Length: 162
Image (cartoon, rainbow, N blue to C red; front, side):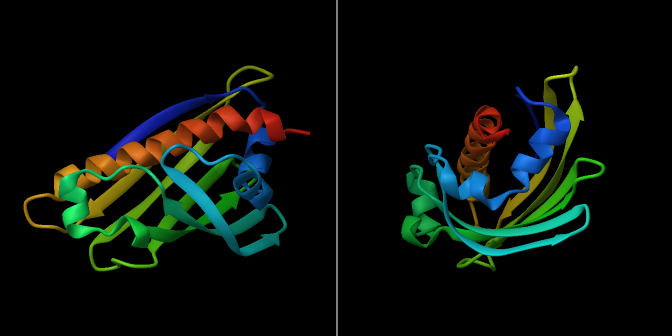
């Protein structure tokens, strides 16, 4: 399943990019209804590039089709993001702690100025689930959870801008 989503962020693009590259943003804010940041795995800064690895857990509701192939208690992963603070571009890969043979997710986003005091984040995501008969249903549930998290992030960014 491929998806492109856009969020408006009430902060300048450069400030939003810095917030989204800071592990304190993920670990210090309230969880969304579907996804919760659990722990910082790695954080590396090299000039204008930031590599961030954070473990997340799915905390939303799974429908019966999803529960047939996924144990909600084992739906955890490390999100690896590579931030280029100069361009506002980010690539990400989700590495499942479990179900590596059934789940694959990666994508990219960019943060563009939208006037002097706001920005827009455009996220392109590819999510694939291997499961006979129910893959599409499971992909929709997980993608909805991801979208909820992206929207929650966009809403929270202004609270973290210095």
